[in-house]
Length: 263
Image 1 (cartoon, rainbow, N blue to C red):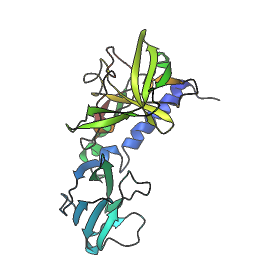
Image 2: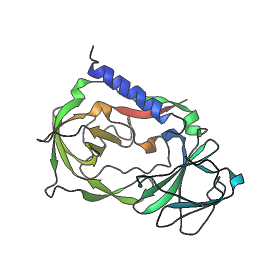
Image 3: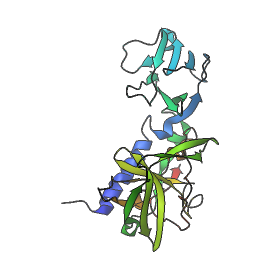
Image 4: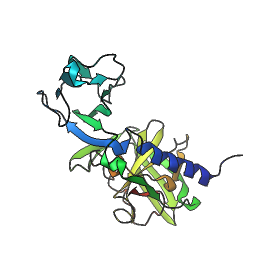
């Protein structure tokens, strides 16, 4: 028997809450430490850490207990950790901690995920509006005229402005309102950063959406029941872009995830 759209949404919603609450999920992020070219300490970690043209480097002794994932022995000397932008990205562990090098616009940082993070310990789920089929509507994707991405500079939650790569717009009608949203490519799918009249009150400051890959005529589906909270809703140490111009809807989208619940 085929699952109904509401059942599929419930399965998606349950999986979302389970994923963010895993030992090294989004709730476990306790720090994003931006690195300089000169070796320096990272708060709470042994060894010295720095960035160069190849990635993140660490200098530590075997007794420090830092192990690169896949290696048989702890780091004893100097080791290169390739960031998440590299197809062969590295991670390291220190006891229960997971250490993840990242690269953003040419800057390198080390993220620390701790299963004992307070936000993870107090997590009680994700509140959401009840599923409503009226919020799942046809949409038409139109790429930009040159067929390539454009960089739109938008504020991020850490106070810095960064370029957001966008690839076109979707047009749709929902709740009697015809609107467009600027979207990015995410693999074969489309993704967007949106806000609406509920943002900052009933829901988090902004939300993310993902749409199925459009067909050859640009047709896809915008299901706002699956509007979801960005990583920065679960940890202050994530970097998330605010919606680009035009992606703040002037009506209430009473669909999708609302807020992080705590005990």
